[in-house]
Length: 422
Image (cartoon, rainbow, N blue to C red; front, side):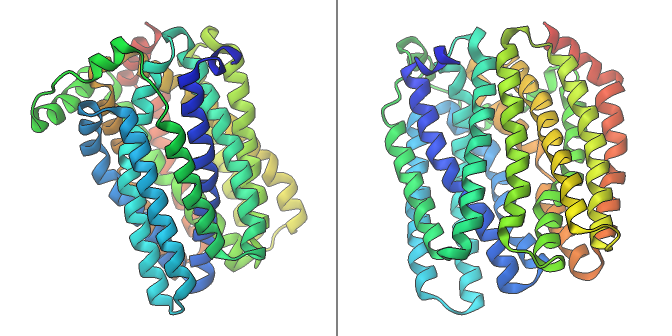
């Protein structure tokens, strides 16, 4: 990884992402907790999370086309500046507003702005990474970003858990806004290698043709579509555990301070950090298909265990001390399994996708894999509002059984694994 950090442009990309993502983790944790505390409604909190997700799902494939047509580095720092300005302006309103309706409206508007810009930022950041490092170093670069993301989340969530109580939601807005501004300034100094920069500036076809070609390219890769459909169902099933169930459990059922949920989130992030280190150390020796299958299996076992423990504590079947003693190690292992699967898959996909369509293809893939997440979050909020936590948890686990089987043993996904081995 030292060789990566000697790459000036990669280091600048890393530095900008490091600062902004700490602020984002800080902000997301605090705002979700704030809405749940303000309203006492898991449905309203779910609507907030789902709104941003819906905007991003709709905007990302469209943005991906523009990412391939425009200068990717400019997209990075412009979107960071816009996000920073929006959050700082939001801080001004939060300081002066008192009514619940006005506060919620402000938060909803900000999340729309953030989601729209994130729809451009993420495919640009993903597409530009292979342009900044050699092909042999790409797996290490992806593992490094996974490692750094874990550190960012650890720092951001820990700070949020402490500062939310000490400083209030207003200063959290200020800190996050400034982090975006600093990130944008850093990214302005990134320079693409001349040949690659020239290739990225080649005139493109019309928008509809570019958009259609992105879908056609995905369909042409054997086994990719059924794998993505299975991943879509698993994302639909498991997202409510982290987005809805855990905040509901710690805030409204167990009546704990936000630092308790911070500890759980940090444990998960620390697991991702360890997983990123291990994958980065393996580097080019990585067995992509083997890692994906191992990670998937560990994830499914971990999800069943998580659900059992959450139901047990919600029904007062175990003490809070025993719950944490068992729950935290499971979350740690779960995070390692996630990295163990996701990083090799991302690396394999990056290598098999042609550079001239990488932005739109990755944007469409991200969108398809997350398409049902907003619906899942809203439905989970409704279940928590009018039913119970155990019903939600049992339902989401049952939904994961069939897609897991297809991702491991499906005949069509075997074609994708064959492609990733090449």
